[in-house]
Image (cartoon, rainbow, N blue to C red; front, top):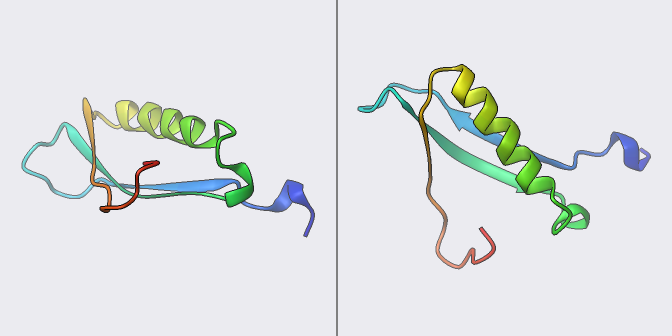
Length: 71
């Protein structure tokens, strides 16, 4: 597969039933090692935030595993 068909990254959002209906939880995010530091994560986050706004969210939550300094 050539580079144009490889995934640059992904992000997953939980729209589940929450105590705060205006909040969406980011439950996973991954950027291909060869794309890290390239702005891919910021682009994914921006696209996710835009979608969440259209879905009625006013806030995003994110939990990060201990030891994941970059996140």
